[in-house]
Amino acid sequence: MEKECSSHDPVCTPFRIDYHDKQIARKLSEYLLQMLPHEENRPIVFVCIGTDRSTGDALGPLVGMMLEEKKICSFHIYGTLEEPVHAVNLKDKLALIEKEHENPFIIAIDACLGRLKNVGIIQIGEGPVKPGAGVKKELPFVGDMHITGIVNMSGFMEFLVLQNTRLNIVMKMAKRIADGIHAASIDYRRKYSVLPMLKNQKEHLS
Image (cartoon, rainbow, N blue to C red):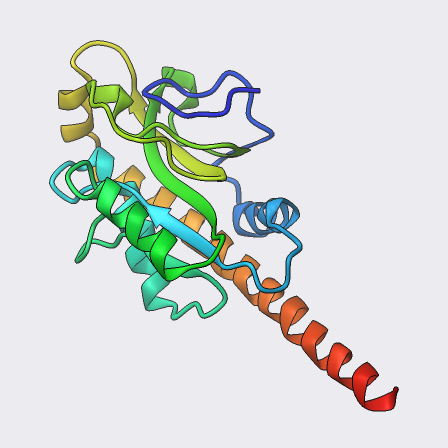
């Protein structure tokens, strides 16, 4: 399995689903929960990569904005429309995350380009993404795992392709991803809020 997402969609990704699927939030949530670490105190950090200056590249910041509006408390969110994580500040943001969180489990969210038949596919996989590969920028790999959305076709003049991607599909894909993460956050919070209670009860009884 490929460990990164460049301008071309990965050949083999464990979870792939079309954004039209009516059960996408539930399915995305279930798969995401399987992938998250089972360590009680390990912070889960979503890095939503992209910029609102390019329609196709706005997927990450849109997801970040939607998650922020949902007031998710189980996970930490970096990258929104107001405060995007993009090519210029990516290294600094990663350094900040490492400073603010001890041993964070990072999930990168990014747009990518792929084959025409795969446009609209949302994918989750282990390993990082390589932001900027589609427009020939050298940026660091990001993430212990990734969520990517194929927003348009790869090929010739990919910078212009991203600029001219329809906002409609990007918005809908962002909403599906955010809904899935929100559902996962609720189950994750329930699981890890019960564990400390059980631990305290056992200590009290012993």
